Length: 374
Image (tube, rainbow, N blue to C red; front, side, top):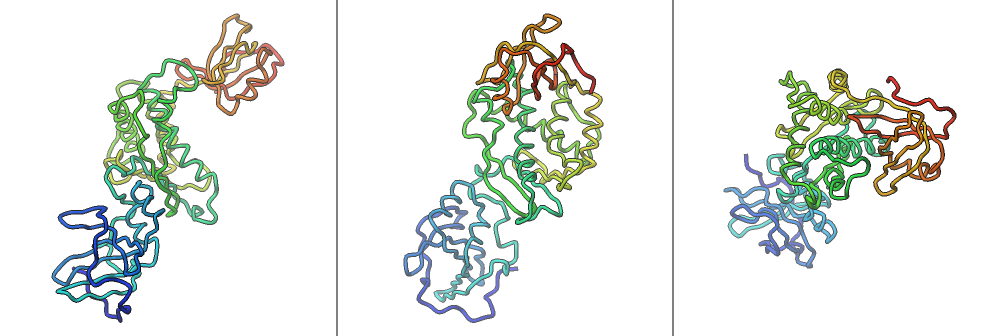
């Protein structure tokens, strides 16, 4: 059903030309669909051809600033949001006759508008969109913990799989090229619930697109399995791979308690339109992870003999069993590790697949050390 001429008075002439002049085309398909034009006073307008039929050509016109245009062209602002960023007009022309009406974009049928979230260019499409849903997640009273969870869980999930695929040989902080792969740039925010859209890193650096593709495929397999839709078995080539996939997916499931009731994952990396994870998904992933879990807690006591402040690594010497221990520590422990350098300390953390990750360091009070049962 085509758009119909509005059954209300048109606005006075003298603001917009009868025939729109294309200043610059932003997107076209046989004819300009999204382009820039100007009103009679030289003000820049974003023009979107919503319908072109026997009833005439209907174009939505929205005043646009240089800042908004830049955001649109960089992929930070979707087309629909740009169209709705300011009060709009509806321009109609047929057989030389033209009229203009003030427009509430919501008046138009949805099929004549760009889908929400659609960027200007295909290369701007987000690789991942992570959306947290919950009754308290609304703009104005949304807990900061929700924002932190959405950003951090997505980054850590990708890191988990890339670390497995790339099999980083050294402990501790990865090279900057490695970090750039899973520290994805945020393209846009959305406040229908809370959503972050993540784009590709600026450059591949040390690693190939094939390796990144492998990570995305494994993430997609795990997400689909965790959602419980159609897939009954989690496909993996080894126990280690299964553990890595489960740990990555676990990071994206809603916490057992808190404001988030479900997480929705979409984007170019997700062949299905959207994957939804709820608290039942978290329970399912945890149950499967217990069967392949290589993680254990540890406590060791010794002299903190060496630390690398760039890589966040350490060597613990003079242990009771006379065996040096090396591993990495979390970035927020750097100041404490420097303060304890050369002193006897007790460290505690998690060992996974033979690698130590320290989460706690304190002054040594005894010589007890070794793995600790969870």
